[in-house]
Image 1 (tube, rainbow, N blue to C red):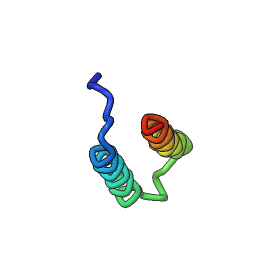
Image 2 (image 1 turned 90 degrees about the vertical axis):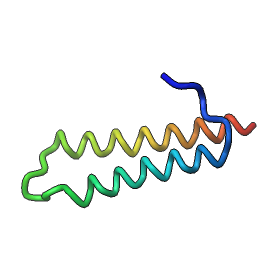
Image 3 (image 1 turned 90 degrees about the horizontal axis):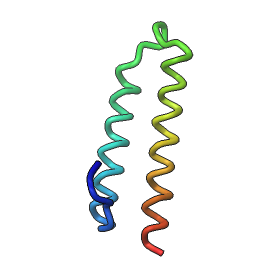
Image 4 (image 1 turned 180 degrees about the horizontal axis):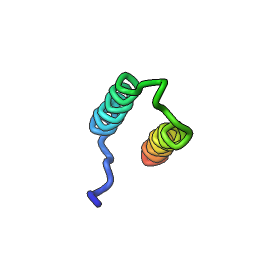
Length: 61
């Protein structure tokens, strides 16, 4: 694992990349072929991004 990201600009860039990747995933999904496991994985990705936002916020304190 890499070192913690402490610079706020780098944190924003990291989150933008993750959000863009998630957006591309959503665009690529065929609703007819999506199953519960796919939805669970997407929820996990959103939860990971939320956790990362909280982590970055706590580093600024």
